[in-house]
Image (cartoon, rainbow, N blue to C red; front, side, top):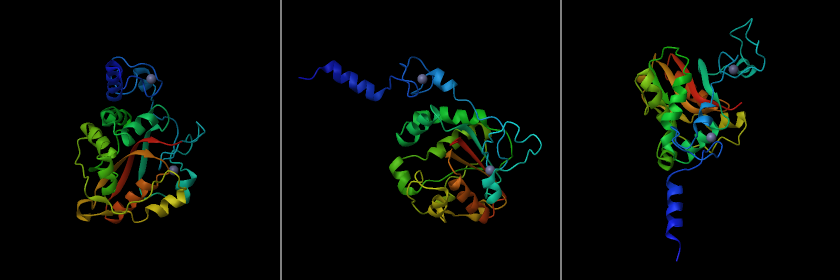
Length: 244
Ligand SMILES: [Zn+2]
Ligand SMILES: [Zn+2]
């Protein structure tokens, strides 16, 4: 007969994580679910010079000394449809583990802590009229049961207190995962994947689009293109993390 205590322990371990997902240390009264205080406090915002359009960090600390509006080569070659994009943190451990748990393992208990990170790094400007999460395709939403970007919007909006639009921009085509694709393949993959249901609701508006990770920026750029075509005055992009 199996040992009852061992079964109980297994059940408990399955229900309650006991080790930090970042460093493996046993968790005590740490305030953030799944992470120890030390790991979480080690997540620091990206600083230093970056492209004034897409936020791509420049290697040289003096890159912007004489030309603060300097653009990265990607933005010079092909200006994005959004006015400006910010990413708060590098997509690196332990934040990468936290986003994976949140997005793919259904650990929605991390939503507030991740949203708070975003709030802490929010640049404070520009002024916007409307917040919008990057939409998931309905089939993906059914499978995942929540849109991670909408949960981030919700938390960010405790600070910004703006109208949220989560049904107007719609993903009409389910596209294969983008992770393995090149920038060019991503663009092709996402072409005309989004649609604005009520253009009158975005016309003339300054929109802040929110997503979890900025990889090549193709997804947010495609959303921005769709919103601008529908009449949006400006589209700004805020993402929690960016791949470097
Ligand atoms: Zn840790
Ligand atoms: Zn750029």
